[in-house]
Structures are given as C-alpha cells and as structure tokens.
Image 1 (cartoon, rainbow, N blue to C red):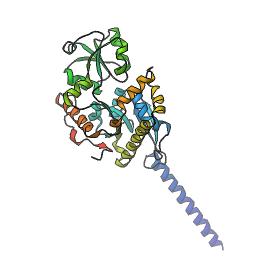
Image 2: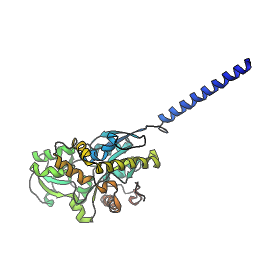
Image 3: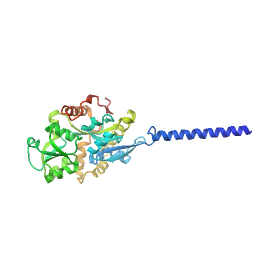
Image 4: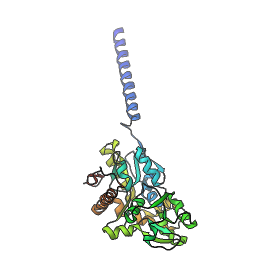
Length: 319
C-alpha cells in the first residue's frame, strides 16, 4: 500500500513536472517569435489618406487576420525608407526607389502599390518657367530615397536640391525659400489653389516616355518571417484593401483624418488616384514598370547595379 501511494505520488509529480517544462518551452518559443496565438506585427506607413484607406480594415479589425495583430506606425515615407534599411518593422511602405537598398531584408508585396497612372509627383514654382530654366535652379525634394527624386533625376538629369519635409515644400516654394519644389500626396490636387505654377508632372513625363504607370510606393514584408507567413500577411493587406474598396464610405471618413484639411471631394479623388485595382495587384505592366524604373535608375547610377532587377519576387503574384 505504501509503495503504491509513493508510486502514485511519483506519477503525479512526473506529470506536473512535464506540464511545467512544456509550458516553459511554449513561453520561450513565443518569446523568440516561433509560436504565438496572437503575434503582433508592426506596420509602417505614411500618414496620408491613401495609406489610411488601405489599412483601415486591418486597423479596425474589420477583417479576419487569423489571429495576427497589427500595430501601425505612421511616419513620412523618407523616414520609413530609413527604418526599412534597418529592418525595424515586419511590414512597411517604402519608396520603389529605395527598395533595392532593403531587398536583402524584405520581399516586395504584389499589393499595396502606389502607381501614377499618367500622373505623379509634380515640379512646382512660384513663377512661370520652362523645364530647361528649371534645371539650373534649386529644388526642394521630399527625400533622396523617394521615387519622386529618382523620377526628377531621370527627367532632368543632375540637379541641385535640399531635402524638405513633404508637407513643408509647398509653403517653402510659395515664400520663395526655394526656386522649385517636388510635391507628393494630396498637394498634387491642391496646388492650383495655392498660387503656384506647374512646371512638369513627372507621372505624365514617365507615361509619355514609356507608356507605363510611374512606380512610386510599395509595401514590403520582412524575409526572416519565412515565405508562408509573408504570404499570409500579404493576404491580410490585400483583404484590407479589398474591404475598403468594397465599403468605401467608412474607409474614406477614416482616411480623411490624414488629409491635412482637405474636403470630402478632394479626399475621395486623391484616394481614388492611388487605391484601385492596381493596388490589389500590380499586374504584368505594373511589375514591368517597376523593373524598368529601377533599371533606368541603375543606368544613371542612382540604383545599385548589383541587384538583378528581373529576379525581384512579388509576394502573392504567382510569378
């Protein structure tokens, strides 16, 4: 009887010890990111209406993400480019121009594109001038890693510039602090009301040159997550975009918070410019445009030449 009691006690102790070890291993694996029922991932994107519209459903929990939770980090695109070089966020918006610099750490998603369909960043001034005159003056640009800057260099060659936060460029040009500015985001729609002159629409220039849309921004997902999880997160982003396109009213109101005072009509027009069927899928010509844009950048020394542009993986494209 005594030996049976000790045997039962030993069995209970063994089971408790095994359960304790299993639980500690589970917690350790979770801490290392190997397993989690509700893993949280950081998503870096710009504080502007089109990004807010895209990520609305993920932000508000309007779609099923399979237990994956997302923490949104809002920063201007040039700052996001810099964070991506360090691999700081699992998911991020980046300039297509900067993608080669982060391609060792990130895959490019096949969704979430910002493509200029015959429109794009604009060169403005506070006075009339032609493009040839503009080449000899000083530009305010939103960042050296932006696609706007690469498009400027492709169109005008080597120019003098200073980096200025994107939302300060228009006022700086109005004051005469700079001869010219390259404007992005909703400034592409509001410039007519600001007393400035359009010198060149870089999206029009690119489209006339190539017949393709101008690649501006894309979403990337970090390679160290593994391809299966990269695909799952890409599907979450695509589903979020699709949900907003199917239910635009609520998403547009959410997006307007980042419109810097724009009205409903301008908000809807701007979101429509950069969130559309192309945002769900680059398409063959969209992927071709990205590869050509980067090859053109390589030709003028603005993009690293050791990158095999044709080998870029677009997660979710089926290529």
